[in-house]
Image (cartoon, rainbow, N blue to C red; front, side):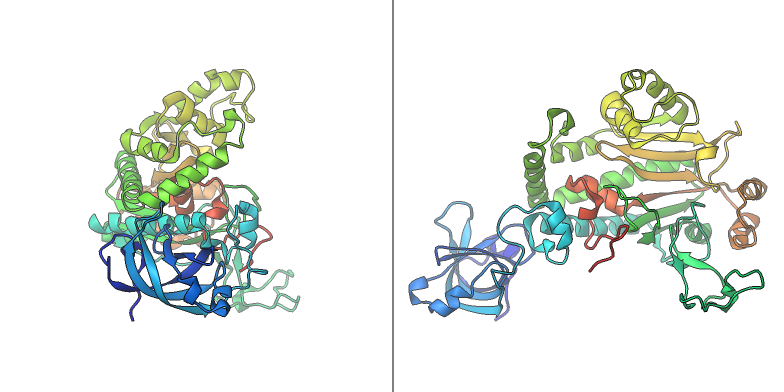
Length: 478
């Protein structure tokens, strides 16, 4: 008999019919009530067993975590908490779960404990909800760009270039690491003998290759894994994460800001519409968690209120220069409450500054633009003032920067001069310079770290909790 998803059963369309449920036991009470979940929804379905006519040996095997198959009649529930339940006529244990050893018992577990059991944490309500929301958001990303005629481009994961110029990259090599790798006369490793005959790394961004494709397809997007060998043990950093990077030809910074705002609102709205039960659960989870925090550290808004705050407000557009003036004059800066005091133009803004602008000053999402050239990447278009670039960052409540983008430098001579000044090898990036030699045009794009988006939409506070198996310094388990 074909089994039916619990999500469908709870809609009641199969009422009074014989149904087959397959899933995992969450709880088993009074030898009678089994709460079963199959991952299709955060809600369990109650299966009621006639324990007097069920062998004791079978009842003992109905334990938390066990996989079971139930056949029975779907009826309206007499108990509170559910509309429908299954009156069991047949039950089969598909996979036992030893209650003495199974770590995911029906009680509250710390997030740290769950990270240590990342292969099983998905069996909890919280992680089931987070991963369903993540899946829906990923679909919304593709739907948004596909509906608007963007081409999906798969940029290389193994690359010879460092798009950000940050140098914090994972090296890729097939050479032996026992000291026997071939060497040049000066003692350095001879990468000409390596698999790719050159020094290669895992990508930090698909942007540069994306630009090349935008200059022929008009508008493209990438959505794939990126890697940073940054020894950063914070709640906002991962060594492996997913990036969404659109690039659009014939688009300036204003068009880029319009696109980013429209895109974010679309995917957030999609998640709010498609995941009401999961978001409602995550909201109550967050409220519970915040009760243990001091009042000053609690969120001013509940989760759904925060999401609607983004949907209902136009993003405020503010120049970097104006933002610096606001921050310099702010109370936390004057009273030295900021960890990083703002005392001059040119400072790189920290998360505390970004959150002050969004949450305290403007009270809406903020797009900062026209940053100092010295603190931004080489490929951003230089403004006429010679000291700022056409860069933009989108700042969100509770999270700070969620998007970084820019109008790209389309002028060959200016780009070459910037690369030379920063010591970036023009021979290595000859192909990138070629896109400025042959039919160059104004173009723009941005990058959005997918996990930061999932973090915001789910209300979680640690980025390690919104990716299935987090990769962080000293941790590549599972």
